[in-house]
Amino acid sequence: MRLSILGRLAAPLTFFVIVASVSVAWSTPDKWRWEWQQTNFEKHSVDFKEIMSGGPPKDGIPAVDDPTFVSVDAIEDMAATEPVIGVVINGKARAYPLSILIWHEIVNDELAGVPITVTFCPLCNAAVVFDRRLDGQVLDFGTTGKLRNSDLVMYDRQTESWWQQFLGEAIVGDLLGKRLTMMPARLESFAHFKARAPEGEVLVPNNENYRRYGANPYQGYDTSPQPFLYRGSMPRDIGALDRVVSLGKKGAWSWTLLRQKGTIETADGIVMKWEAGQNSALDSWNIADGRDVGNVTVQRSVDGKMEDVVYGVDFAFAYHAFYPDSPIHVE
Image (cartoon, rainbow, N blue to C red; front, top):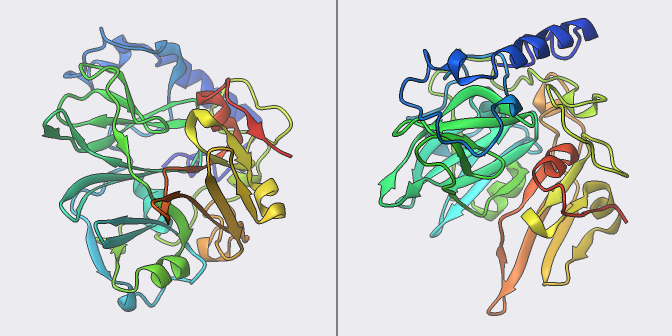
């Protein structure tokens, strides 16, 4: 994992410079081909100089490919306020704790007959769930060990094309320009998930000794002064690592603003609501001790019923990097 290499952000500035310099030096396909023999580097939509090594090699952060689940009632060692990615499809519900995803970043799964990939990029706080069906085939994903705009670059094992996690878009390889369908999901507390899905299941480690599950190797990251290995422009009027509720090109809303108002409704009828009771996964060494950043639901009325929509709870710098022309509302 990345920031443990940096002593969980305790390293001196010179070390950051050394890491960044090494990463830039490796930003060329000629340096990557030995590890990526199937990737078609002739097809790319981004400048290779934008892609940097985050430290680990290909699959150095291992995806979970054979996930194990237990019922919510069987969970005894998770705090009610711990963050999970909650997914409900066709009445079937599963929770993917960030205490596991922070170490794996990707879970390839199938829920209610739908193949999905659940992803979390700690450096951007980006939790995104994808339908992994594309043009008649089912893809499964791993980690490249690369970053672009500090965001996870994934790859599919079928073609070894590289995908931007924040957008769900292939940026290098034979599947260039293809986009995965994002699925509605909530970044919520375990208590919230359990209340809305009492028959749901929860991801547990296949080997509880494989990593220090429950620990946050990015201690203090979301209150650090700058993002890790990010060289782009910063958003205005908001801190780089302040959280925003994002709706793609439509814009993003400051977490602080939503917290103050409690409810925000957009012009096109999307309703965002905040309430207390969820830990930050990127604050304290023990995730269960992280400060309370609260829960948010994002819904709209469909035939008189409120339904979840796709949204993000991202760091402001990341949203600005991928949607530079879209507004971030702070008041």
